[in-house]
Length: 426
Ligand SMILES: C[S@@+](CC[C@H](N)C(=O)[O-])C[C@H]1O[C@@H](n2cnc3c(N)ncnc32)[C@H](O)[C@@H]1O
Image: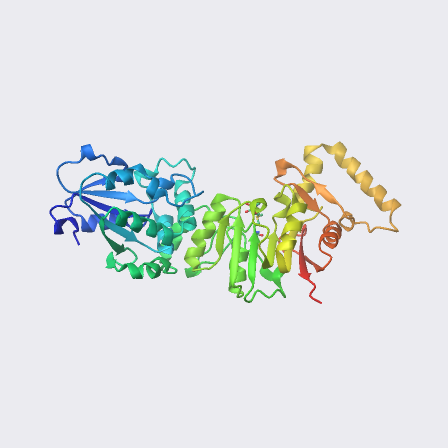
C-alpha cells in the first residue's frame, strides 16, 4: 500500500521500527518514487515541498547503551522535531517478533549509517544485545502512545508476514512468534560469520559450532525435569541447552564475555530454545534468587573471589549445586611453578613435597590433592586459584553442612573434578 498516495495532504511518511525490523524492505516495495531520508538527516528546512519518507530506527536513542533503555524515543530530539514539524505526519509502525529481529540482525551484512556511530567494537553484536534486552511490548507501546499523543495517524505493519496491516489487538501475538525457520544455508552463513569456539553445539541439518563437544555424563543421575537452573559462566550455552533437553522448565545462563553471550542468543534462536541468556558478571548477580539446580562448570579458576562465589551459589541452590574445578594437577597451574619462577622454585617445591611425604605418611596420603589446600595461580595464565579435592570438600562442609557431597572425575581431562552437592532433605 502506498500510504502517502492515498492522501495528498500528507507530507511526512514516518516508517518506524527497531533495528532489523524490515523498514528498508518495506520502503522499497511500498513507497516507490518518494524521497527517502534517514531520521538523522531530518531537518525541516531541507524538505522540499513534496512528500518525504523518513526511515526512523526506533533504537536510535539507545545509542550504545543497554542500560536504562526505557522511554528513549520520547527523549530523541529528532523524533520530537518530526512530530512538531508542523507538517502532516502519517506513520507505518513496522512490527516484528523478537526472534525474527534476532535472525535478521544475525544475518545482516550492513549496518544502517545512523547506527554506525555506535562505539562498540562489535556494533552488530550491540544490536543483538539491544534486541535481546528490550521489552518489545513496552517499546511498541511507547511508539504507539507517542504517535497517539501527537494525533499522528498510523498503521501497524507485520513484517513477519509480508507487511500485512494488523489490528492493534494482534500486536502481542505478532511480537511473541517463536523460532523463525532457518534454511541450511542461513545456519551455515551464521556459522561462517560468527567466531564460535569453545563449545561444539549441534544445530539443525547436521551442522555444529566449532569447539570441543562436552560430555554430559557428568550429569548422570541429576533430574532436570521441571527444574529451574542457573548456569554460571555458561559460554555459548552448551550445558543450558542440555538441561533444557532434559526437561528443565526455566534456565538462565549468565556469561561475562560479549561474543559468547551474543553467540548463545543466536544459537538459542536457531534452536528455538527457551534458555534466557544474560550478560552478567557473577559478582553482580542478584544472590537472593533461588534455583533448583545451580551449575558452575570450569569457571571457578577464573574468579577473583571463588570462596565468596561458592558461598553465594550454594545459598542459591535449592536442590543441587554442581561444581567443576581444576585441581593442583592442572597443567597451566603446574607450568607457573616452572616457567614463571624458574627451575629453582620448581626444585624447592619438589623438595617440600618429598618432605611432606616422608614426614607425614601416617597422616596424609602422598597426593597433594589429598591435602586441604588451594593453589594460587597467575594472571599470566588467566587463572586465579586451583583447588585440591580435599580443600573443596573441607570448605563445603564448613559453609554447607546440609549438603551431601559426591566427587566425580570430569571428562575434560584428568585435572578437573566434578562435585555434585545435594541438599540433604532428610
Ligand atoms: C572455561 S569457560 C566454561 C564454559 C562452560 N561453563 C562449560 O563448562 O563448558 C568459562 C566461562 O566463564 C565465564 N566467566 C568467567 N568469569 C565470569 C564471571 N565473573 N561471571 C560470569 N561469567 C564468567 C567466561 O567468560 C567463560 O566463558
